[in-house]
Amino acid sequence: MDHMLELRDICAYYGDKQVLFDVDLVIGKHRTLGLVGESGSGRSTLARVVTGLLKKSTGTVVFDGEVQGAKRSAEFYRRVQMVFQNPDASLNPKHRIGTILTDGMVIQGVSRADAMVRCRELITRMDLPEDTLERYPRSFSGGQKQRIALARALCTDPDFVILDEPTSALDVSVQRRMLDLIKEIREERGLTILFISHDLGVIRDICDDIAVLRHGVLQETGESAAFFASPKTDYGRELLKAVPRIEYE
Image (cartoon, rainbow, N blue to C red):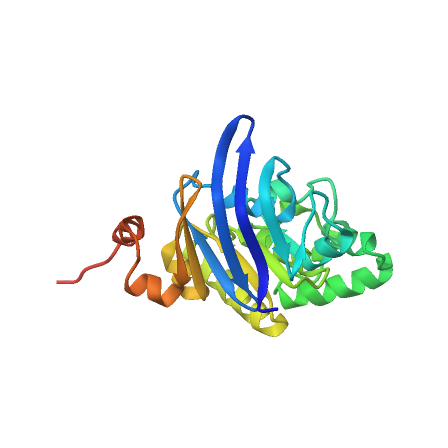
């Protein structure tokens, strides 16, 4: 099986409003696909359909050759993880980082003690302070919180990770380190990644493939290099024209 994820005829709704329209998308194993589009285009909604967080949807989600039902299995959630755009909303401020990171492994049957050992290894890999596990989220910077969120996603040793705008709130230098870390971990672990971003510069740097959404409709897909060389659609060309460029005299 060459595909890690297949989406067939995906439609999704918030209340009575349809926000995704018959989306077909394939992500190959060990590939990073960039999902781009304007705010409100349906990118985060599509990620929630994949993970089963959005229940009001139709179509078929196939993960590693298996059709997924409305209720995902524990094994699915071990293999599929998501890093959300805002770590302040996803890291419980009342819990120490050690508890936040180990809970997922404990649910999967790992002892708390073994989970803590694993978490200390991840904290070191993320270049975070040694006392990170004993501290609360409020004591970290935005970039550190995103690395903590990434560490939590990696705790269960997943095969597929969804990154929803993981660098949008970071300054340029911190963003660079975060992107380098993602690329390093992708190579080390052989991950498949769905990378959601509005920043085409970031997409060009990190993604093998690209998919363009507009108003919930998939406009085009293909290899990233081919898209940046020559988009297939008018909308794709408009997106590229909107990228700021510095010109020197």
